[in-house]
Image (cartoon, rainbow, N blue to C red; front, side, top):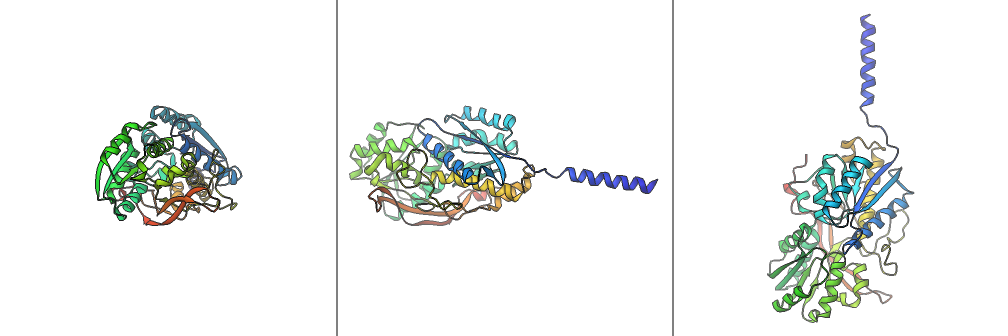
Length: 392
C-alpha cells in the first residue's frame, strides 16, 4: 500500500507542477489609448498609424498570434483616460497598453495599469517620475525620457554661443521636464520661462513678452497644433528676423513644416534617429500618416511602429505565454527587434539609451522644405534620473 500511495502522491505533484506553467494565449489584445482629437491630436494619430502599420506588415499578428488593437480617444483629459484604462483592464482584459501622448495622462493612468500587472509600452510620454523613483517593471518606453530632446537643444544652443534665451512650454509635467532638460545643458542667461496653457493656440501675449525681452534665441516645446500656431505667429510678428528659434524634433517635424511652410526655416531641431526610415520587413518608407502623403516621412509614426515591434518580439520570445509576467518582462528588456529609428538599448529603468542628432530645415532635391540631419549632439545618451530607479 505504501509504495502505491507514494506513487500517487508523486503523480499528483507532477500534475500540479504542470498546472502552474502559463498556457499559450490564442491572441494578443492591446489597449491603444491616445489623444485623437483637439490640438494635440496629430501626435496621437501618427503614433496610432505607425502602430497599425506594423501590425499590418506582421499580417495582423503580434508574436505570431492574432492581434486585436482596441483604439480609444482620451480627448486629452486625464479623467476620461482613467475611465478608459479601467475598462481596458477590467472588461477587455488587455495584455498590453500603449499610445498615450501627454505625460499628465500617463501619470493619471500609470499606477492602475502597473497594479494590474499589465505592461505599458510608451510610444511617446516619458515622464521623469517613471524614469526615477517611481520606475516600474511594467513600464517600458521606446521613444525617450521627456528631458532628453530638450537636453540636446540646450547643449547645441550653449555650444553655438547664444547668450540670452527665452523658454516657452505648456504648464504640465511634460512642459516642466522640457524646461529642466534644456537648462541642464544650457548655462547661459534665461531671460524668462513662459508657461502656457496646454492646448493654447493664441500666443499674442507671449510674443509681446518675448519682443520686450529681446532675446537672441527662443526655445519652445509646444507639441502638435500648438507648435504650428506658435511658429506661424512668431514669424508673422516679425520676430524671426532677429531671434533664432530652437525646438525639439517633433515641434518642427514634417507635418509641422507642411503646415507652416517656409516660415519654419527659422527652426533648428535636435532629435533621435535618421531623417528617413525604412521599415525592416518591406523596405518601404514609413509613411507620414493620414494627412501628409506628399512630404517626407517623419518620426512620430516610427514611435508607434517600434512599440508594436517590441510587443511582437517579446510575445514571440515567450511563445505566447503572456501570463508568465517575469518571462515577458525579460523578453521586453531583451528588445529583440530592430528599431526603424536606429539602434538603442534599454537602460535599467526601461528608458532608451540612444543617439540624438541635430537637424536644420532646408530644401531637398525636389525643392521641398524639409529636415536635414547635420550631426550628432549626444551619443549613447541616458536620462538623468536612472540612478534614482530601484527597480523591484
